[in-house]
Length: 411
Picture 1: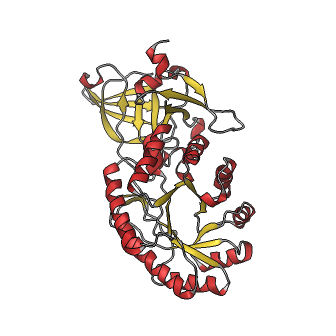
Picture 2: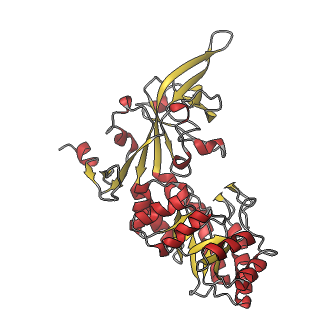
Picture 3: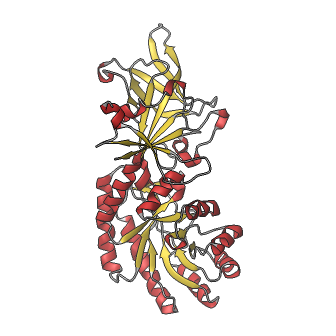
């Protein structure tokens, strides 16, 4: 057998028993080579774009988390990427889970995760979702206003209330200050008192500085607020032993993550030295962002010339766009750098290029202008770091399929 065949020998995987069948996992040695990986598939005859997911990247991320934040138990934010293979892989590694809906609970519980490993981290849940959580004995859930406290008193009085408060980072891709969280100084005490009057248990606090946080100091500000809420809760008579520091951890910048981890550890040692207080977090993009590489095919091109007839811009139309695999870019534009899988690509002359998605919508444009060689229909473009907040919101708008996914793992 050739080395290439050994490199990516496909084997059956028992990660999960899904109705649609068991996904195939392709194994590699040493390091996943994207160029060699895509050679395994007949992309010329594959209409949708293709995600290549490196499951071993999730394992490396968990080791990094455990090294830098040993006290904090990660509860993976399912909304970030709810592919059952990804969720099952993390479940087998022992992570907890942050679920926001009945369907996310069904997914995680259906993969054999015990309810004790789940936090129902949505402050405003429909009654039917609360009833399902009660049936499944998922007791930990967040709350941030008096109406939800009364709802819990009526529909799930034996749940554990975790008071969520606002503490937003100054720099984040997705700020959350406007939608969820009570005011830590003015509202939290009132919720604690109301819960006590209704004989409900408040067991902790939670916050979320915002997805894609780049402000290290944001966590210390929030942990200080949490300390004050703990003190208030203890005075009222609540037995509080859990703090959820939310998400926001970077997926691609390990140096920034290390800085955040240092700040969090220092703050916890100062404000929550008692190890009896359990600390959890809700990382999403931290785990999955770098695990995915999207492979797109050019299915059409167009040359735009100036009045003198000289080539001005090359337009490329690919099989993924902002209604599909790039859906989050419509809301939070990020810089993208397409990779080429051509021989001597770096030495070829470059032209101003625009990349369009496949739909008829004129907004379906991959942000930015690029300098690319004169490519042909059928050539491939790769986009790294595509694992977070993309596939769950991708849609087959205009009838174009969302990407398929192939899974890889180190031997």
